[in-house]
Image (cartoon, rainbow, N blue to C red; front, top):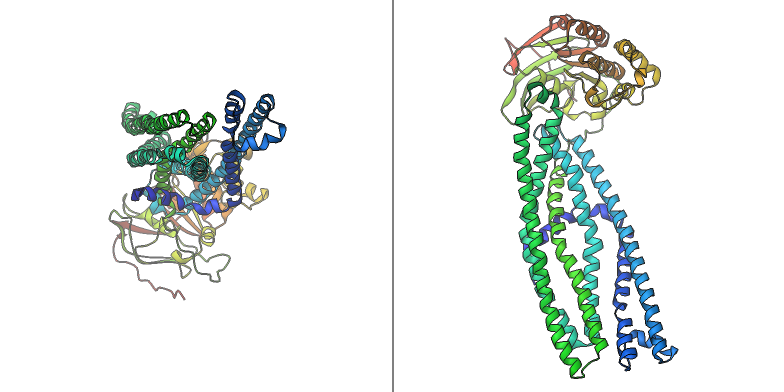
Length: 584
């Protein structure tokens, strides 16, 4: 039977992640070996019963493999009965042991494979440019890293623990059936095509359902994450009903997709049972007729019927793999969509000073996020130690200039240089040590205050951390906390005021000790007292550094040595003359 073209596409999606299994190939092959040993034990299971029926109950003589093994014990019924009972115990124990070892080895490898995939996806995701993250929902990406990688694991593990052993089992049972009696063997395996036709039909039906279900679950996870991130706004405006309604819509979509998958699974089992029943009915009639005609013994018919029953089990397992592989392939597509996103090409090796002087040159700079240009042929020079304040209405492009200097985005056209070197071509680790950023709302991670300060420079020692905290006036409020700088804080700095979070952000920048500092409205939303404390800390931060800041607050503007007016992504008035330094 020729497979549907898309069936092979399912395995191709999972096969893409084969490199993760290659690292555990020896363990996976060991698991396959245990499955083969289990198959051998299963092949031996019906023969003790055949021995009892033919040699003990009917007083005949069995020609099965077990009869030949126990023939030295003599032909007495009691000896045969004892040998059959012992054989049942040994065979069952062996089958259970190999089943346990196979599951233990396969599932352990599957967990390690999933952990490796998840780690690579997370690492790749973190390093993708901001332009990618601007287009994605956080919850959707979280769903891909957690749920989708688990379903890839299910597909990859089932490939080794179910597909390969299942094919071996079917081949083994079929070969033994034909070797025992070719007529009964052909009758028994005649139901196989009917089972696989049913499974093929089931696969095509479930493929689209699985894709719809994963997409619906991803949207739901994305909306949940967005709502929880904005829970303060939800409470502030009392719009719980709005979020309930949106959640209900997405939840209903996920429910409908899940119910469609449940319906297909429920429909498939009776169809498979019916296909199996056809073969069983034919075997019983033909086998019973053969026994009545003395073509073969009752024990042999029992063995063949048992083999057929056991052969149908892997057929059912393989058929049910359609759902696992379909879900795994749908998840593999979603994970691969992340891994296929190109990273920023590595910067060519070049000798770089430990510390930049801080000169910034922006020449004919234009930027388009994909929704229209936000900068238009912008020219700007910031000399070392100069403190520039960008002024202009909202949407003028001020924050975009800071994002470009920080290396978060790349120009669509033009050049942006740091000390005469194109920022887009500089190694990211080096650039991060040259540019410190203090945002409008400093993001703090869960952990201690010390952890959040050390985030800027992990190798910083306790004395350096304490010095930065003292200079940024963090020590002033940390002294009142239960454990000082070792106090645990929640996500987003829960428990700290806006001004306190800003001072932690300034301490980070001080600890980094970068020659270039970017300030993006760092005092917005603060009361007068908090603003004065933050400006005191900023005064220490900007000393002897190149600074570009955006602000609407006169108090912060007093730190600037020059103002630059922007509107509509361009400078207001004639652009300053620029002498672009050589980049060679």
